[in-house]
Length: 254
Image 1 (cartoon, rainbow, N blue to C red):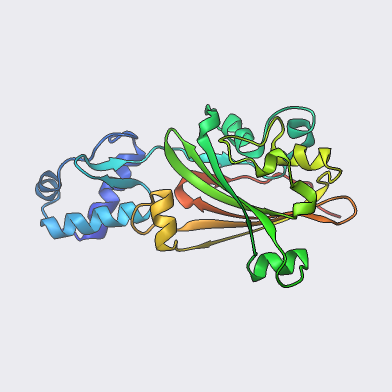
Image 2 (cartoon, rainbow, N blue to C red; image 1 turned 180 degrees about the vertical axis):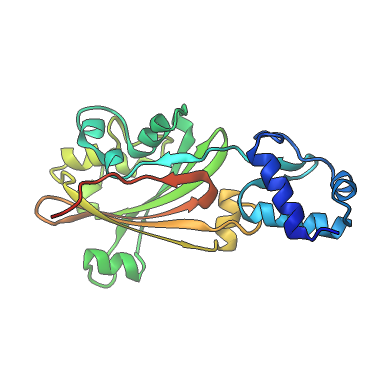
C-alpha cells in the first residue's frame, strides 16, 4: 500500500507531465483513493503536501485545482532600468508582466495612502526623529484577479506631498510611476539595495494574498537612493512564493 508521499509523487508527476493541466480539477478524493489503493485520509495528506508546494489549491465547491504555471518572472536590475520609467511609461511590475508574456490592466494595482507615524524599521532607515510622519503607500497587485504580492513604500512628506504618489487611485502614479515622480521632484533614483528572504505568512497575509495552506512568502526589503545617497523610498514587499521566479543578471565584479 502506498503512503501519502508516494501518492503525492504520483500526482506531482502527472501534473508536471500535463495529465492534469493548469486550471483543471483533480479527480475526486474517492477516485484517487481507489486508483492508488489507499484510504481517503492518505489522499488528503497527499493533496495537502502538493498544496504546500504550491502545485494545487483547494477551491470551495469546485475541488482541488492545479495552479497556473509557470510563475511570473520577477526581473532583477532590468525591471528598474531608466529607459523604462524615465524615458518610457513602464513601471516595475509591468516590466515583469511583459517579460513573462502576460497582459496587465490599470486595476491590477490598487493602493491606499496614509500619513502615519512609522515603525522602528522605517524610522531607522530614514534616521527620523521620534514623532515624525511619513507617507505610507500600500499596493496590492493582482494578475487575472488573483493577488500576487503587496508592496508598502514609505516616503518623506517633503519629497512627495501633493504629488501623484499620494493619490490612492488604482494603477501606477502616472507615466513612469513613482520613480518618475521622484525625479520630477528633484530626487532622481540612482541606486538601491534589495534584501530578500522567505518565511511563513501571517494570518493577515494568508487572507490578503489568498494563499493556500502551507505556502511561504518571499519578503523584499528595498532602499532607493539618489546619487547623493539620500534615501527617497523604503519599501517592503510580500510575494506569494509560487507566483514568481526571481531573475538577476549582472556582471561579475573584479
